Amino acid sequence: MLGSKGHYTAFDSDPSRPFHYLFEICENMDHVPETDPPGLCGSGGKPRPGAAYQVINQTGELPGQCLELGAQTRLSSCSLTPVALRARFPLSLRYRGGASSECPEGREREFQIFLRCAPHLPDSEPFRLSGVEESAGLCTYSLFFDTAHTCPRECHPNPSAPIGRFNRSGDPQPTAPSPRLCSLNGLCATDWSHAANAGRGQARCFCNSGRTGADCSTEESTSKRASSTSIMLMLVLLALLAVGVLGGWVYLKVKRLATLSEREDSIAYGQLPQ
Image (cartoon, rainbow, N blue to C red):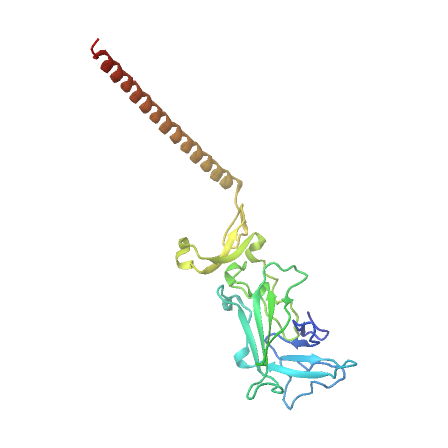
């Protein structure tokens, strides 16, 4: 979900852990998170805020706490464009250099975001977040970020056009319209058939009946569908005709053999001594 200041907010996968996580996609936050009591995150002596934080607000029993989980760096940059998207692996983003308190010696906290293809989310839900998982003893936190914007580029209606990016404010709405994979008239999947030849192992659209084209955006003409139906009917009729001819030939062959057998039996009977 989006926080009140535009950043993303996720919760721990373990309901007994009252942590929530504030983060940005491909950017550092423009300010440290607001907490209760204020100032829990501080600046840590760093010149700018990080990209992800773990926060627990003060309650009657628990003191408040805020820990930085990592920052956006040159090595963790990303751009959500079709050229960057491939069918065989999801995009991932890792923020490093977080707080080291309570971590094994020499380790700092890290935050991983796995951007996962989710082609069937409704327009009212442009993304969906999983609960944050913590790798025990490793100070590594991860979650899945499901969105249609990380689906294989081969299934987008215009693979050469930018499909947007997540900006600094965390606004999930891209700079271009939300992609309609396979024009919502087919299934985006990896083609492992041998018929695919050079395209084997790449994603493509498998169109619904009556649709055609690389993105299933073209409706098959009535005449084409009628022609296909006529061809199928002709093939069925030819098959039935072939079966009938074969059956007739077998019947005549058997009947002829039976007649010859009767004639030979009659001749043999007539030659018996009286």
